[in-house]
Length: 323
Length: 316
Image 1 (spheres, chains in turn purple, brown):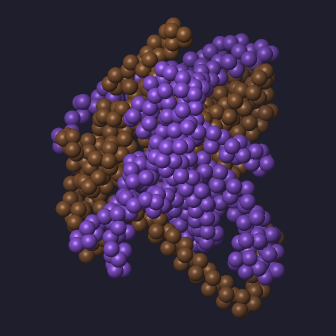
Image 2: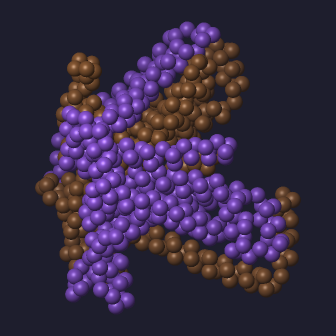
């Protein structure tokens, strides 16, 4: 074992510093709040409690969001104003258009399929003996990083030439059925679909858990009444279950759309955005941090913001209604 | 109770053909459910089995050959964790980085969000509603929008019209972790404040009133009264944040750099997938090392995590 543990010590010291800083922040805030005398007015206390969070939000989110918007109207090095050039690039250049097209495919398919799989599964395992185990199995990928999931699925899609033994499960299945092994991740536009499968695999558990909780919340009387009226399983599903959990379905769809728009890791780990599989978030990273095209990267980020905003607002409205 | 007896009574009254039909459909349903469960579990199982197979076997045959020719070894893990050559994983180093990154990145937002949520839920001051709405609205800002300026904030400080207001951080070596903690803390606050605030606002107001009448300060109320009561909310947000930070690639890639000095496991795995895409013995064992800790945390705290999910999505 030639791992050098001594070399790792500075990191652990840094960790101690970090934890000490955390304790210090907590202690200082609590101490200050206790020191300020209690009067009728609450704002001195509120300031002490809120200030750290608000300062961080300002530095970490508010100012950067404004600056990114400005950067999107500037050239790559951030020196000159170029007006709408970056946006024009985004909507006219073929490589940028491919990115937009892929993002569109992702955001149309993922929420729909995740919700369908989650819903079907939640209904099927509802009130069966193995319900909790069944849900855990599907929920498990939620804990796995997108990077980890990407590697798991690269292995499933792995390709070997025809005369060799296949090591990827999918190609093995194809070969055993008499087909030819395929390079699943290298042929557009199908490869985007194979990446989407990974996202569905990760997220279906989330949908199952949320929707299953909603299904359990349907009043027993309604189900019983429908059953007395002689409703079959399908009728039951479309006439009773689905309408009753409508708001939960929308919540799942909305969270999935937001998550999908920002998706970065799967594409990066599995294809690196090659073979026409890039999406907005990945392209934004490439432009801003690899090619030094800050302006183009910023424009993509702003566009992402423009896409996410209406969905988030819709979600907020929806939440109010649920309440 | 009455509904239960009614249900039982009615179930007995089902006619014979109906019963047969129901049993048939339930059998089809179970079969479909089992197929889905198997489909969902197989890829991870394949990864685990592969990571334990000898190198030449992984590269030449599929993991299912294990059932006809079982051979297992821990060699891959040994190599990927403790090997020191640059082609091996050096995962032990990156594993430590992941731990060092995660602990403060969970603790800090948890504490700051709790303070802010308490102020927003229980302190009557002017502008409270507006601040709450503002914080909530910040969830709209996608991470991608904050990255470039935040990076330049770290590397160049702040200057306003040519006047240096804040110095550059210029962090090197282990101190670079501070950047990652800082970024993760900022990005976690909107959701954290929102979730904890929702939970806190539901606590009975009389309780706080009574304590305050007895002369307790806000600090005391927060520590002795509120903290124990919002435990479940803190736990679920804590797990959320843990999984998010541990599994994050984007923030780490930008603020931690790509070396064994600071980068977490996700960054290393992404690199290995890019450059050594065919070194399956390292990729599989490396990936398994990276997923095992969140899986353990997740399985042991699943209850809280699900509660957090439901609080965040269905109810509000």
